[in-house]
Amino acid sequence: MHVIVICLDTLRWDHLGCYGNRTVNTPAMDTFARDATRCDAAFCASFPTIPMRTDAFTGNVNWPVYGWKPLGTDEVTITQCLKEAGYHTAFVHDTSNMVPTGFGRDFDEDLFITPPQGWEANRDKVEFPVPRENLRQNGGGFINDRARTMHYEHETDWFVARTMLAASRWLEDNYRRDKFFLWVDTFEIHEDWRAPDYYTEYYSPDYQGLDYSYPNYGYTTIYQRHELARLRARYAAEVTLTDRWVGHLLGRIETMQLLDQSVVIIISDHGMYLGEHQRTGKHTVDPEDPWPIYDEVGRIPLLIRLPSRTRPKRTRALTQPADLMPTVLQACGVSVPRTVGRSLLPVLSGKTRRHAEYVFTSCHSGDGEGRIPYLPSCITVTSPRWTLVTGPKPWRPALHSRSQDPGQKRNVIKRHPQVAAKMRAALVDFMRRRGAKTEYIEEYARC
Image (cartoon, rainbow, N blue to C red; front, top):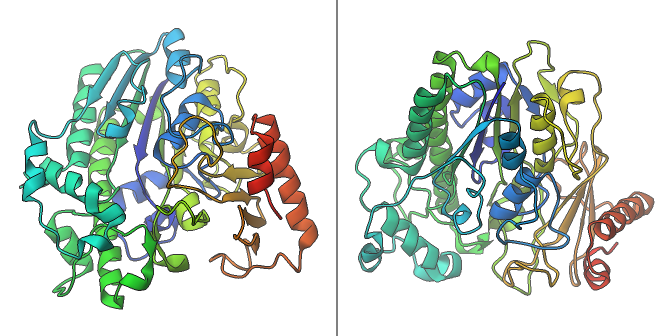
């Protein structure tokens, strides 16, 4: 049994055709989904980039006690468990955030797709297509992103193309191994949303006006309607670009006849507001304004293909990235350490339709290691029927019916106070069991 995980940054679940989108072209992942199980209730727990991957690698949910920090030396990872079971392990990635945080430490091979040498000299050449003050944190990240990609001429220059090509080459060299674990990680679709022009023009032809490719991580009041539409088109173009190159890797997996010998997983870390709830960006950059994590950000695509032919086409079972580690280990017949996450195999085999009762989603906003001061986050409690969003004052706790209010716009907490109280009690119990401090619980777990 082999294991191949493809992790895509900032991919919204609702921008894939297999999840019902009829506007954005994603033929490769849609085709893959036909023979996979589509998880319709997968949610990020620890948010954002590095915390989510920490959950996935360790099988635990870590946001109640710490935030964005390197993997702890005492944390057991999926890579360690598979290596001890005789797996050859490889990490192919362009997600630079994962380098200083130590995610490559346990792999036999760590292949980092780097920006061109000397890219820093390009910073002084970057021009702003929109008012600089309208970009996240006055455009500092925009400068770095444009400087890293200023050399782009052909589609194969893009990070997602280079990463999927490198992963394909790795498979060519290793497909005959008895068992391997390959984690492929690309920072595409993360902004700057600058796909090749022909992708963008497909969704936004003949555009004229301020050309936003980098959200402000703030409110939509700065945008004209056509400017916001252009920003969404640029995001869609990035999704289609990414799908094209994920398709290349999936095609190589199929050509090498690995599909029926492998667990293949496609997952994202989180989504992004594209105007919903009057916001653009995935989180706040204002320490006085904690943002809610609604489905546009917190719900994630998760497609799992097992070698077995008998599996449900879709599941509504509530799941989270921490479930990935025990699921993979159990599928491979490897001993599973004690984790918060639980194996999805009973769901994937059709033995049960239920999994978790709740998923708790947040970025660490206590005083633990790795807190990001400018990124306070409300806490989202998700059940199959309800969403509760709670946080510090002046945030007003909000309860939403998942079936009657999928856009999460109508707060019905006054009509269903007992539901909210039960969900809050579950949150408090979870935070305590995970080691959260009393002050953090009292400030954020409000109802």
